[in-house]
Length: 145
Image 1 (cartoon, rainbow, N blue to C red):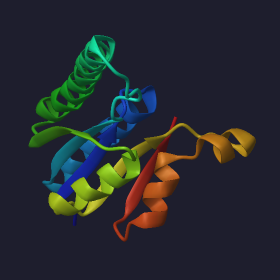
Image 2: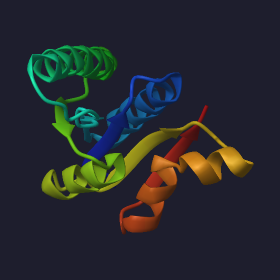
Image 3: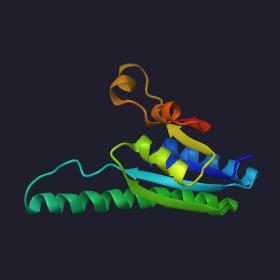
């Protein structure tokens, strides 16, 4: 039924749980998993050397977190004999990066974790999962943490 499953990750416990479900589902379907980690652009635009040093430090840390998160998904997939491809992209909006990747990779399912925020916290912080659900025509499986 599914051929290509997108697994967005932010390195959280919830995204790890979603990756486990996605790898199991991919194995049962003979599908492949595409992992994506979306990095927010450097939040400070300053002048001079301090800005350049800050940008380098921020990007190095973000790339390391992305690499670790995608390696986690890759390991799960390899253990189950599931084909895996991963990518790190930079976007100001995580949900847009997820949807762009789903379209570019021709994915037919998105499996992602949700932090399960409720009430005022959800209203103020928003939810990447909610935005993905609202803006895609693809099936989305949400794994609550």
